[in-house]
Image 1 (cartoon, rainbow, N blue to C red):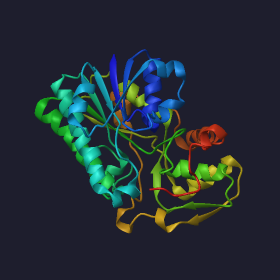
Image 2: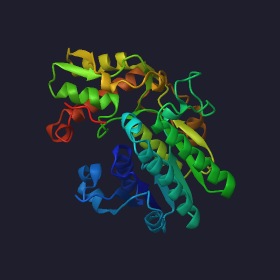
Image 3: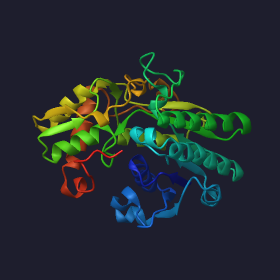
Image 4: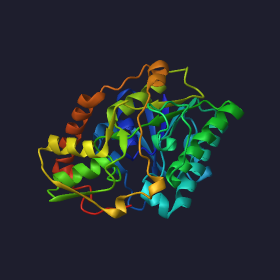
Length: 331
């Protein structure tokens, strides 16, 4: 299959690209244009794999470019987005342009060139604080940050293209994916990076919220299962482990696995505005099991511990941790 991956240079996108190539697909990667000619995390993957990838520098905000890059694609894995909730408070328009307008460009081009399937990427943040546990796909949507609001809008655009034009789109909604290569804007890598850097105290935001963490290989396997499935068009599907843990207990788990005893301190600029904090998330993955035959391998407390251990091992390697600025909080 000819598969286009947007956001391929990022965390999930780079792992997905590797897996697609290893499965024998012809992969084209849309990488955000930059003057350094940098491929992001794609630069760290096996050279033999990278040699089989077609790199296209550009910007999903440009409809003309998107149209050109979408041509001859059978499937689009659309992961490109502006992430990072704190920065969305400062520059909400940037999120509108990338997450909404960029998604519109992908959908319109896919329609123009009769793409067989678009796998659109959502986020569990669109649910806001859980009103019911576990969260099913029918849970109300609540944009508690500019980031989540733009992702809701993108999801609804995808749904509208299916309803209005029969565009073959499916939305995957991952719950807090973690693992090697993840941005320090997420709780697990920001904690681990500080731990392995040898700090005397860890600076974090609120420890009270709960989350449902999904190891990267489990998230990628869900994307791979969308390729052959014909039952998923027009659907939105949660991808999560179904195990809820508080940030406080998660940090303690990381410290135990790293065999470290470090003081945790609250840093105010890491705390979300009161009404913007998503206090509770826990996934129902029943629909994923039904439609994709997908179940997470890293599930429950045992699975989380194994995933955390693997992530600590990756961040502990000097060649990996040097790629991060772990001592400074960056929006």
